Image 1 (cartoon, helix red, strand yellow):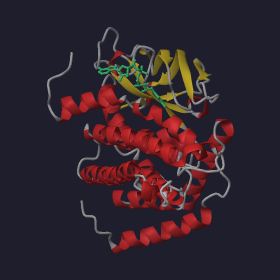
Image 2 (cartoon, helix red, strand yellow):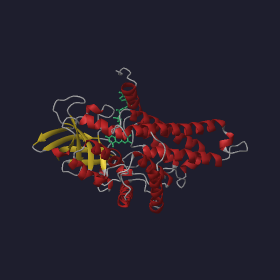
Image 3 (cartoon, protein in one colour):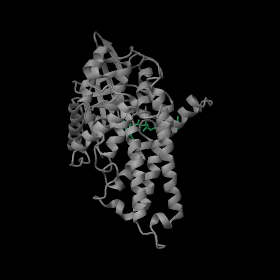
Length: 393
Ligand SMILES: Cc1cc2nc3c(=O)[nH]c(=O)nc-3n(C[C@H](O)[C@H](O)[C@H](O)COP(=O)(O)OP(=O)(O)OC[C@H]3O[C@@H](n4cnc5c(N)ncnc54)[C@H](O)[C@@H]3O)c2cc1C
């Protein structure tokens, strides 16, 4: 990858910085619920109206038409300006949209992409089912063809933000009697249709982030199938490639800022031997140095992948390396923050790079090695598809 920034890219950075300085909201995002969803959509709408939504998306669908390097510059500037994250728009912006760009028909792109960019439509992901999480090829939700429709019946679970969404990346078994990866289709599931019942799941922190989504003979137009009928596994792998590889780029850049915030906090805390915590605690200093090195290594890995994406538009199994490295590093960095900040991590006014109390980030980091495929599944993918090791039993 050419890491030199061109004149055009330098100008892009300046313009992005100036726009963000004027437009990043001063009010903080509510932690959960409808207010949080409205906040996320308002910010995405503002980006769209300002001409900054979908930096690397084609212009004809409402994007900026920029390069992948400009996309990374945009994320760096957002992190610098402490701009809000995409929140409930995550699935649409980071993996449904890119999947449609690569695999959708012209009509699907023209209809859905501008709605995703402007936050008119929020998307969610309907892959997991009871009995089909890590073993995704075990899905049982079925779609039967009836004229120009698929009649869909079954259940999805752990669907993040389904109660705020109008569309779902829906995996259904469309070939009766098919097994495993065969006979599955990737469908644009309209979750507002009759026959779709969305039931939020309340978790132990009191939040309702996940839902169960029940399909009871919901009639979805056949025109909503992306790619060919029964070829959905291929589309799902492209979809997961985006989810595992590129979707986390913005969060990786924020992680670098988190590490620097921890360094500053360690330098400001008394260490008990006359100096600061950073001066006096040798073990902590080594952990901080390792976190900095790991962030730099992760960034190199991501740049390598982005460079590859300039040649091959859909990320492959190497996304699992990025995801595994990133999610485990997030957990180590949050543990480090707990050890440096101590009791202050409970202070609701002391905010992490994510704009939340530190303890909340720490607790939330446990989910990262489960969502998008657990760390064990990422290791299996790396072993089998990158290192070509024999399949486990
Ligand atoms: C925060 C969060 C958000 C999510 N959002 C969504 C969403 O929007 N849409 C969606 O469809 N799903 C979503 N999920 C679900 C997620 O994809 C699944 O939880 C995940 O794939 C694991 O599936 P499972 O929970 O059924 O666990 P299981 O598959 O039952 O796994 C249980 C344990 O067994 C291990 N295991 C299973 N198989 C193997 C194997 N072959 N080799 C080694 N170890 C193995 C796993 O690593 C895990 O530790 C989300 C999950 C989380 C935590």
